[in-house]
Image (cartoon, rainbow, N blue to C red; front, side, top):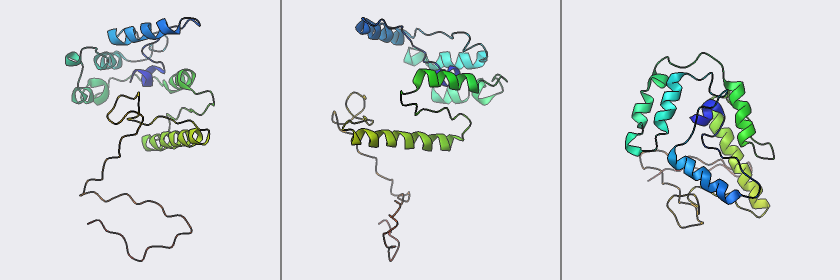
Length: 187
C-alpha cells in the first residue's frame, strides 16, 4: 500500500559504490526496525487516514499489526476519508522511476481495470520467463530457492489441485486440432 500511494519503497538506503555489503545490512536493519517515513512531496497529498492505515499495516510487532479484517473496515477503505486529489500521474512516475527494468517493459496501468492489470502483469511475467529460457537463464518461480516458501530448493511448488466441486479450466486447443467427439467430464 505504501508503494501504491507514493510510488516509492518504504525502506531505502543510499548505496556507496564500494560498500554494498553494509548497504544491505543497513537496509535490513531499517526493515526490521520499521524505520520509514512519509517523505514530502510524495505524501503531501495523501490523507491522514491513509497514512494511519499504512502505519498500522507496517507495524513491526505482529500482535500490534492490523488484521486484514480490520484493514477492510478501516475508515480510509470503507468510509469517505480518501483525499480528493488525483495522485495517479505522480505515483506512476515514481513507480516507473523506482521499479522499471532496464528494458522499459514496466508501464503504469493505473487507469486499467484490475482484472486487465492482473492479466497484463501475468502476460509480462510469462514473457520474461520465456525470454529467460531462450537465453539460458531462469526467472525464479514462487517456491524456488531463495523465495521463502515450501518446496525443494530450486524446484517450483506443485500447483494446487482443482477442488472437486469446481469445474476444471479448459485449455485452448491448437487451431489444427480436431474438436473432441464428446465433452470431457470430471469423475
